[in-house]
Image (cartoon, rainbow, N blue to C red):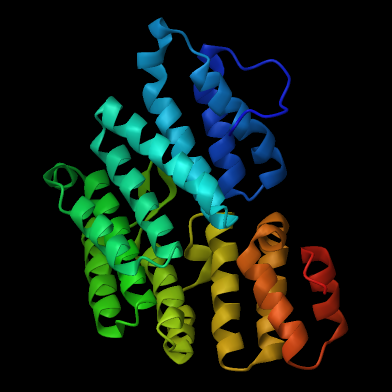
Length: 300
């Protein structure tokens, strides 16, 4: 993203939409080794456009920064995440697209929550969800649902179980009204009853109720989730709940299922490495756990 130490020819302006589609595909299929080459190059190409092209591609640059923010959040790169999120916000506001503005706000809310500012994160998400422009279309309603989900998770992180469930139920009601999956250009996983239920798993774990998290997981067929990245996230969220219940063997099996679904996702996320490291320290170490830890770089 900073353009440091990167050589090579940049894609031509007319190729940028194709390149953007490729990096979105890399993200949702968890092909991160390809994404870390293509995404910085795409950002540099967007900034290299001349004044005559900049207006036409401002929206594309904003989308690129939104995706960069999501990847940096996943990698727990807070400082670069704030930079990317702010650039995404600026591009979204300049392009005048309400959905992009709302998605930029959602990413900022995620970063605020990761920094421990749960109240601010809650306010950012709910204020963005109140934008009247999001009530004018199906995709706007779906973006509202994503923002309310984000607010629910912030409520969970501050220990407000009742508030989390109320907000999650509100998001679920929006998804039910929409029916099926609503594809969102700036959030390729879309929004559906299944994605709300996936959110519920991690939110319940965050409030300290792993039994409720596992009940939510049992109600969600993993194949109903819209991408490899979301299905891998399901298995890691289940693993977290199982670890909270002390069900170590099942936890390891769930982590192995996540790795089978998306090896690069499972091995690159600091949160997953931390969970694996905790299992190594807290009890019996089976050969499959040590092998997983070695592949994820979590061995002491």
